[in-house]
Image 1: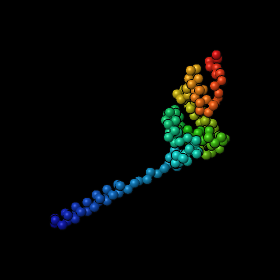
Image 2: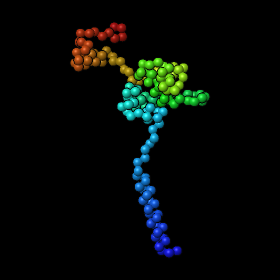
Image 3: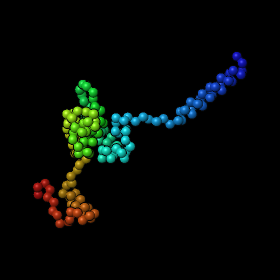
Image 4: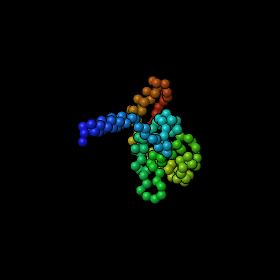
Length: 163
């Protein structure tokens, strides 16, 4: 084997390595899943359609999503994200279940079940996120509202616990 052929092979090998390195630096575009609104819309567009940002929707979905997975393995399962987003769209548009069902490509009866299931799951989160003030805290809240905007007024008596 001649020295020239070894050097030529080494040069070809180095060119291939440089080409691989160059190709590896080309940014690859991730294709969006158009059927998943969390990926299909930019944050502003998502907020216009669902009245919350995608991060918020993903957070809530993280809390209720595991409970939206059906234990039955029949038929075509609708992913938890699409269940939640279909119901969220129903809440936001003040539309009929049939319209949202058509938009989500499900039956109206399925949409009815989704609204019931997702609404119960969201309502079950209330104790973790809603806190009513006790008597002392209520007085501080009233004073804060009054200091900010003169609302509701210092002379309003709030009755708590039926007293």
